[in-house]
View 1 (cartoon, rainbow, N blue to C red):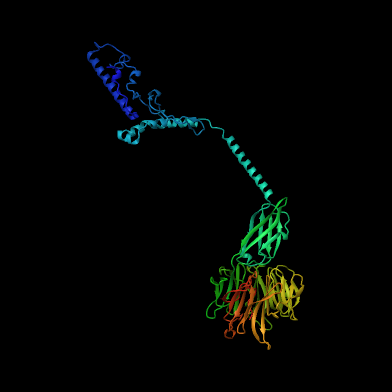
View 2 (view 1 turned 90 degrees about the horizontal axis):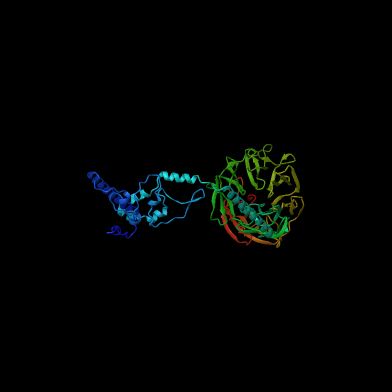
Length: 627
């Protein structure tokens, strides 16, 4: 039989490395056993009769000589067993040449060079995966762990590989960094140039708007400031419009355009401000700068006295459904409010206390008084930050004590109370009012002299003639309505002292008991009398700037109107009515008033009554009602 007949047939499927190793070990064991048997035979015969042959001649101890090409290296599917030292590479000759290989793409090292990814066996990882057996088959043969150990990389081999990688030269990274920085700077330059071109072709644009809508409905002098993306050419007032219309002044410079509203704004209203034909200081196309904002809904403070309990100050919306008490005391005589604070006069131990607090009633503190005495007719200057009141000493006689002197002091309490003097003497004041939007005070003393003094300057007292009463002072116009000694009612310009008669209304409802100005008109309290002079009824009449009169509220002879005042913008009116005067007794406070009073809120734009609320002394009013 030939050697070809003796070779086993090729397996139907490729063997795993574990199977090939087992086959090699079996062949080696067989060769060792044959060599040992031949050695014993020689030792027994002493070498006689056995022809001497080299291993090359007999294939190794009596095994018929065959070349590797003939028997495929003892087995076509086996590789020769070669001792393997840790850290060494498997010889290339020991890799089966007929096994299928997959050569993976060269791996890139951290230094940027390409090198083949090999492990300690010298084989590509992908080649081992191509010849490996599925986990289920390895578990079936019981040799999965042996196969992993045979192909695992020794620590020494890994260290040698890492050492080689670290020794490779590094590429020049500084150049790439400089190129990247240059590219970024180039892009920024292009973007800036592009924005400049857009700015020149589109004209000015608004980049920021500053406005406080809540403050705008409380007091005059609020601002909306527009900031453009470039300096602007001169802006004229004719280029500015506000919708709905409201009087304003303009202050524009550089990139900013400031519009100051000379009167408070309506509540719950959207306002649109436009600056037409705005151009850049360097020329270019014109554009319209436009912005809009919405004011919040109004709220109001009311005082409610209680003969059987504590008096309370409430804050409520204009529906009366969200009334919240903010301060209470046994006897609250009067109060006034600013956009951030309340000033309250209370009676304690037969004298007065003056308390300043936040609008929610917190952070209460007392203001020092000129002495131990009584406070009345409280007013506040929002712009000047002052509180004013009439003061009388508790101990008062014909020769000692002060009576009805006008005192002003800072709401912060940082200064001492200042008693107003005329001609170097403390003046006894009959009636007085703060001039809106200023720190000036207009007053009439017991001699009938009408005077003006500004707390923000050292100009002293300015004499304005004689008068019997001050009806009111218009917001934003510095104009007062006063009644002269001869009974005439005039509009007095407080800036230059000029005056003109107050025009009669159409139709003419006669002389008014009180006149309260508001932006756009006046509220006039008139009384209808019979032929004998007895009152037959009362009414509040609105008179607009053109003189057109419209009845707003009318009551019969049984009721009495105690006060009428308008909201800061003239959008609403608050009319205080004392019903059924015959059965409505007065209390015993420093400011005595009927126990039962109602405040009727009316929309001046439509003339409709909105709600009637229990209480009086609405915070819209500059002064308390008079009995």
